[in-house]
Length: 165
Image 1 (spheres, one colour):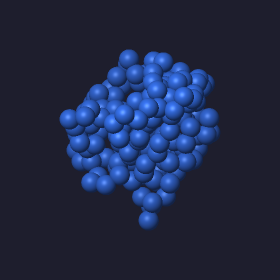
Image 2 (cartoon, rainbow, N blue to C red):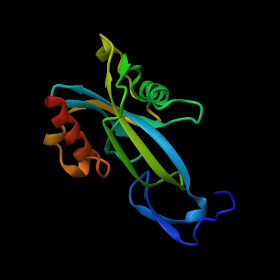
Image 3 (cartoon, helix red, strand yellow):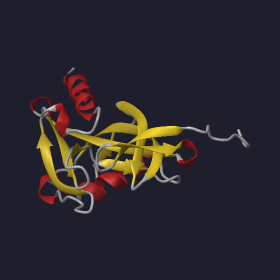
Image 4 (cartoon, rainbow, N blue to C red):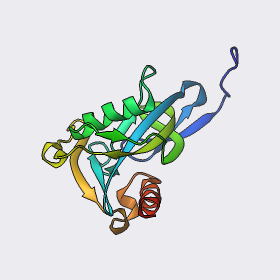
């Protein structure tokens, strides 16, 4: 509703480079984002974050003029060098939380989609070095939870489990 004010309180946000920090609720903005799960057998294509060093699912913020699928295709290509051949019509997972990017707090709404890579994509995978220092095919069950951003390993394991059915 117009005229409503943010509560006079602090919100605790996970920071891009690790750790947490408190921010005034009035500074928070919504950030819808879409992420792509490229699955090959028991492996998922992940990036190594240039900010945190953690394994990260390719994707990111969706612009107001983009659909989730359009934003995902753009972000996935920016981070991996490869545009998905197909994006599943419905999200396979959703997550939300408080997140701070470059000291700005966001209410993060994250939609996850299965993506299909085009034929021969392996030869064209290139990380976006400003954000992703390496790309790897990873078996999430063989990596410790601490190698992933909070909640991502569990999300990936669920996605692999439903893929196997």
